[in-house]
Length: 166
Image 1 (tube, rainbow, N blue to C red):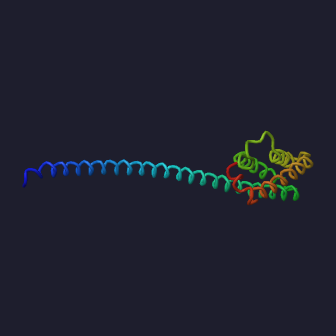
Image 2: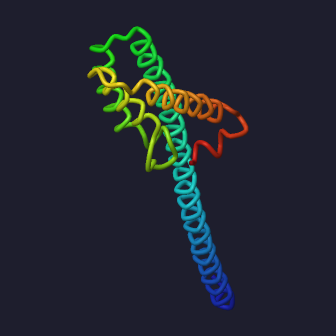
């Protein structure tokens, strides 16, 4: 090789190697930033998916509890109208147990008082021969109205997103 070319060729080779290393470093830096951004995005998407799952689950539970409340009202109504004291007493006990486990989903928070409790207490009293029919029917009417309104509210499409998160 010609000695005058050795220096410039060697310099060019070193410069090319340096640019290659620099290019690889920049490429790796961008790849790492992209991986970090992708990971952050995946975490955000997963969080949104989890939030949506939670909202749907709570909505479905609330709707189910409203349907169950309507069924309890129907059973208690039938037993009271038939004056079936034994069945009324059992229904009152079972309905109250159901309510104690479901009230948070029936309302948006734990209520300080409830017509459902008044209803089941009056039903139990009537089943024992007490005279609580007026109290029963007053609470029944109030609870029936609430359950219907709550069901309508939950099923109203305009309230869907606010209902799910509340």
